[in-house]
Length: 154
Image (cartoon, rainbow, N blue to C red):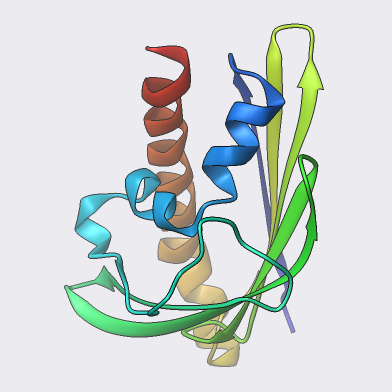
């Protein structure tokens, strides 16, 4: 069984309060997701801030515009420090995403550690090598640019 990890860091020129307010609001996820992903939140009654145990249902279209249902649970939240989301229903066997923010002299360092396991055994390993890993990198690169536009005015 091949379990993979993806790690990304981004320096954001904003206060910890500003960054936390943005990333802890579920409605902002669409703003930092590429349009081609067809990201659409289906959950009703979304609060302004996430909380432990919160479930978020959405649809994504990552491949050939094919809709995939995804259900995420926010499993841990430490205000102005980190939160963890885990896929409960979706395309992966395992999806565990740690979002951390740390104050720095110039703003906030945001880090992401994604631990994931594609489905279908050896087929998933091949798909990760040729497609999945690249797609994850592309999505996080897009997010970095979007956050730079929002916070760093770049």
